[in-house]
Image (spheres, rainbow, N blue to C red):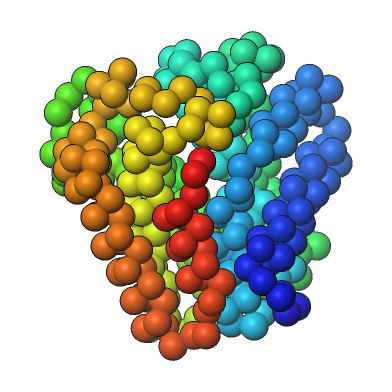
Amino acid sequence: MVFSSFSNFANHCKKTVDQELLNFVNELSIPKTLKEAMIYSLEAGGKRIRPLLLFAVLASFQKDLKLGIPAACAIEMIHTYSLIHDDLPSMDNDDLRRGKPTNHIVFGEAMAILAGDALLTQSFEILSKNDSALTSEIQIKLIQLISNSAGASGMVGGQVADMEGENKQLTLEELRYIHKHKTGQLLVASVMAGAILAGASDVQVYHLKRFAEHVGLAFQIKDDILDIEGLEELIGKKVGSDIANQKSTYPSLLGLEGAKEMLVSEVLSAKDHITNTGLNAPLLHSLVDLIAERDH
């Protein structure tokens, strides 16, 4: 499928993932409240950056985007579960997510935990479905990739490091570790899933992984900057929460201008690695710009 603009590509992918996520959940024979809680957070909005990265890699290899739907939806379910749990009183204790009451505020803490658990486990059923167009070998590779990225060695481990780093003055290296794992690993998994599905060469896999790592850092640096300069009505949560909670951030360690310079450096490095894949990949370049220039 050829798209006339990045906007058309992004809208198409977002609509596809939004609909497929609802289809997957609505097909389940589960308690009504659990289904409502799962759908509530899946429908909470967001730019679907992770699926976009996966689909953009497939498009760069001129592969059918439909190949990426199971992996894209599985990753987005895992991302959504992590947000539900992050917002809990025992974690970040947030009342708002993207301008809406958080899951536990609407459904209660116990149901929010269970909705997150259900999304996490459902993601792996999607990846391993017998009716998939993917070979068993590819399915296993995707399950290994995504489970490693989401678990103790990835996102969960990063969340632990983040919690243990609260009210401490972290070094830049410690902050990088947290964000590489907590935020970056699922972004890397999205790009690597696209590489697996597209049959990328070893050299292309190397550069795509490095691209994704720089994108992950850029994403977090931009988040930290928006917590200072962003508009509350666009971000959907209170601005300045990082300062109020005494969290170490890139602006707190480098200064606001230093963080902006680091953002530019990460963007340029990401784009260099795209070029080194040898692919004609304008969608990946546009995605880097979207991440760096977004206002929420």
